[in-house]
Image (cartoon, rainbow, N blue to C red; front, side, top):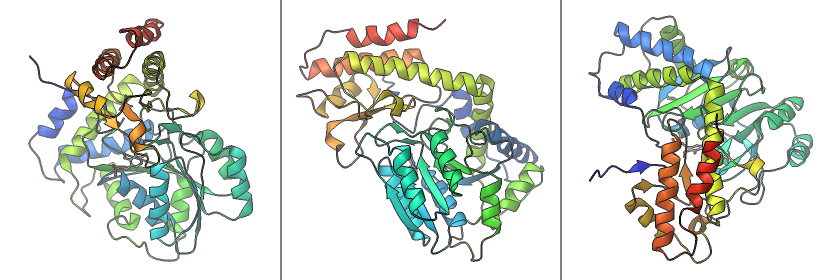
Length: 389
Ligand code: PMP
């Protein structure tokens, strides 16, 4: 029997064979011509994936938290005011990072599962003068998806720089950096970008770069400092060798392969696929009698789903789901941690993965003696999947 398990957590996700082959290729010098070409191409492709033709991409070894750190370190000077649109755990983290660089932070919060309304955010923007506003596009702790387009439009009216944590969204959830007026978007390799963990990815638009150039004080983090990374990125894009910190050669090859696959699919098709598979999975969750953490469908991510355990069921069910061949994640938000679980469905995920996951969840539910009609979740997911052309 195959002992392969399907990994359906909100990152790391499953990766394509081509990406994994790039990871296993013999490592060359970081100034080898074929590496320079791959790095340069990856930088160009990032602009297309972020839908930000005039953005400045940064690709640096690190995780998504480094990408957040990079945004804060380069855009914040001590005493600057920052507004955090907080939809969960990762909003808290952004607030801490901003404060570490001397920002005076204000959080606009909502109850768990909800997102602050545009009116609440506007009231905060009116009350003070903010240099920067952060939005977690999809908070992975709650599966809440923020209205980035609406928030960015609002933030612009009040002159704030718009910074979007897209770690659980970029290349899966619809995000149009330039068209929506987002000044900086960031992600990490291990989610919808489809590359093993280890890359911090940032695309900074013209207003963010101008704010950086206007800084009066040096950047407080040596490793994250754009003054060092900007010439490196420019050099690789011009197909010239450069060095600041040794780039993770295999990860960058893998990134270039994955970005090529993403663009072959096309951004619109990719957004649509995530929407469709998410709808199928969420239909199954509902049919199985489970509520979700996000309070309404319009505030729910398409990259992951966060179902509450049904009455009388707890996280012991997840071990049975795993035994049935699918790995899903437990809760993360401290207020509700033990009451829900999380299923990631982003990147190369397909309809077969969705049906396999629903099947394993049904198995898990039946093992803990939850009363439901077997197959009802599968039928609901399949009904959505059959709607496609
Ligand atoms: N922001 C969000 C929305 C995330 O989901 C994560 C990781 N789950 C991070 C930031 C931090 O990324 P990393 O774990 O790669 O440091």
